[in-house]
Image 1 (cartoon, rainbow, N blue to C red):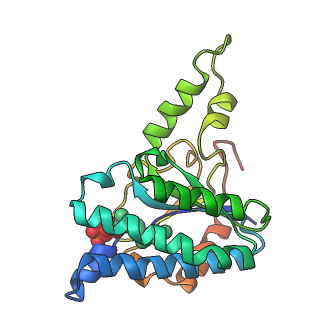
Image 2: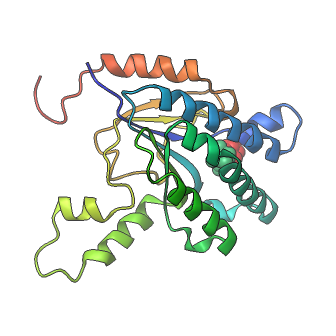
Image 3: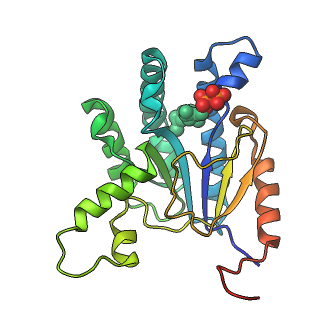
Length: 225
Ligand code: FPP
């Protein structure tokens, strides 16, 4: 039976969810952050799941209105600060992937602080993709290793990426069927699940059902049965 050891999620639909309720988009992000908390707790309690990687802010999200970007930055800071204790209690190690140098110094400090304070946790790894774009990640990786004497191998490039772990199961909420520059290298053989459910409505039982379907899939990785 397949195990979904590494689950990655494109959390889409916060804005539409709020607009459907005649609320501001920011409200959708706030409720979206609560769903992040629930889904993380669910994964932390499931010993088969080792890693949960969530797309929280892409390299393209800077194109949004300034106020929305600022709101997302504040929400992230608030979330990480208030969740630190929960991470530790649930034995969750927090990591960020992406180029966080574009963030304010204080947000960078919050991120590093949570990474340091949870470094000893050996349960689930929750990885937040922050100012993350897969093409940018691959370029940064190539620049790290380009001066080596020999030809670059798949293993060398894979190890130079921010996220060094292949994805088993990649889920996108919100109805669109695309990867939006998320984990393009690591998802080479991921099983892809798309759901129309908007992220604020996504529940742990939705995730449980997707995992059940995933376990039934025959994964051949390009080989034969
Ligand atoms: C997509 O919804 C979501 C984002 C761009 C950001 C994801 C953010 C959260 C889930 C909340 C904050 C997260 C943390 C970890 C605190 P959208 O705005 O693109 O929705 P739309 O497609 O309906 O416009």
